[in-house]
Amino acid sequence: MPSESNWLLLISYDGTNYNGWQVQPNQPTIEGTLENALHRLTGQVVKVHGSGRTDAGVHGLNQTASFSVVSEFSPEKWRIALNGVLPDDLVVKHVQQVPSDFHARHSSVGKRYRYLVCNLPYRSPFSRNKSWWVRKSLNLEAIREASSYLVGKHDFSAFRAAACSSPNPNKDLREILCDVKPWLHANLCFELEADSFLQHMVRIMVGTLVQVGTGKLKPEQMKGILESRDRTQAGLTAPAHGLYALAVRYPEDRIEWPDELMDS
Amino acid sequence: MPSESNWLLLISYDGTNYNGWQVQPNQPTIEGTLENALHRLTGQVVKVHGSGRTDAGVHGLNQTASFSVVSEFSPEKWRIALNGVLPDDLVVKHVQQVPSDFHARHSSVGKRYRYLVCNLPYRSPFSRNKSWWVRKSLNLEAIREASSYLVGKHDFSAFRAAACSSPNPNKDLREILCDVKPWLHANLCFELEADSFLQHMVRIMVGTLVQVGTGKLKPEQMKGILESRDRTQAGLTAPAHGLYALAVRYPEDRIEWPDELMDS
Image (cartoon, rainbow over all chains, first blue to last red; front, side, top):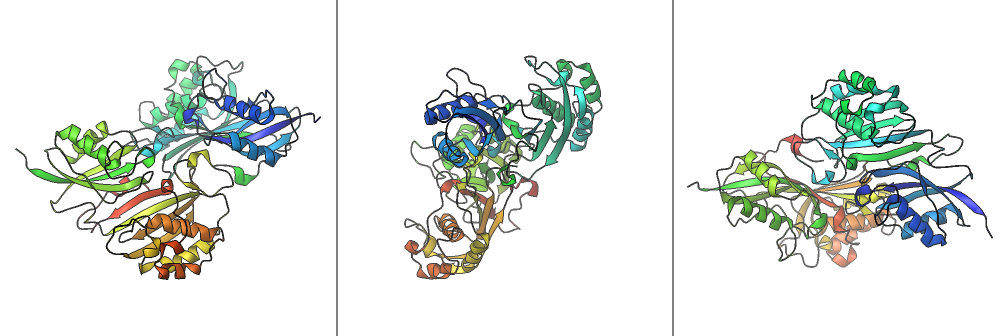
């Protein structure tokens, strides 16, 4: 009988019809849908470990998940079999076998998120569930100046959800980009990369930066908000449906994905 | 009492939930939804003339429609009032008053369509209802060579639906482009422009060109297919959900849209 082996999935999903990542009774979730698919294929009860727990409506572009199972499937057989039983809004792009101590979340050394905004006077029908419609014209220079106060190693308590259970509010925010894009479903793209993120950290940061863009907040206020460590000082939480889990970083000697698989 | 005035709309829609343009009993259609909105706002039975009749599932990016109504609304009031009663997958981007003899279809002198393909070994969850998933890798050079046989003034009977009621199969196909794009919902973009198109002409052309791309047809066969004037000689009809009405051309002295309104 084959012994248990450990696997890593690279997945992409449209989060619109899911109640987030984490399994909940009688709700469609990404984790539950993957675990059901694995149960259907193997007959085993398999626990799937995601790289992070995305909120309801959040999308995944190059998200990762790991699981251990007794199986002799090849990676390509796994990919084809899983896509054969998964719904078409949740796709496995790549499968690889990993050492038994590998864990999609614990082994990660960085994460990158994208947040899409549709900044137009009218709501594009193609932005529905895919980006945040912001009607007022945004000042990108002000947003970039505000972002510069946030980058670096800080206590990000001002940008965490009240319910956030992370023991450590100190994160290394490595980059914030805010660029104009010629996309049908969005024309403004934020990208944020850190060692890891607190709950709602990306959404609160983007919500606050957009309020800088509309002129409601001044860029230099960002410094005081950060130092306050007080969530009530920061701005609003941007809606979930503009957020995309874009990349999960692992030590290069452990995982290297083929570049052509990376949605961008 | 104000007299009847003639109006032109620039609209954008996600066609996924519509049974095409033309009014049908007990079916959601673009025309019917616009006419209902106008009835709700004016109390009048208003006939909306679209620039063309898109199939079920086809999208509109810069589609046009005209109508006559008794009203003293300003263009901007029309836009806001219509968007207030339309569903969020059908948006009015611009409204302008036009001369009484203007007609969205009869006055047009050209049309441009886009067709999106997601050419990946796996089906992207973001391509659902937005582009045609083609798994086999496509040879773009072969597609471009095949396209060169189609451009120009020809009898396009080989590329028209059996049910097409157009009296004249001769069209001036001004351009076919096929370009790689870095879009989430598609990575290959066809654009076709002509004075006007026969029913299913874009979809049959793209279906046939994709079969050239996979190697099932040779580029030089396009010449014989065109000359046959026989639909059975051409390739398959590409699915509706990859098609976007991209632009409607009018004489420049009649209509000029603000560039920033043009989705691209």
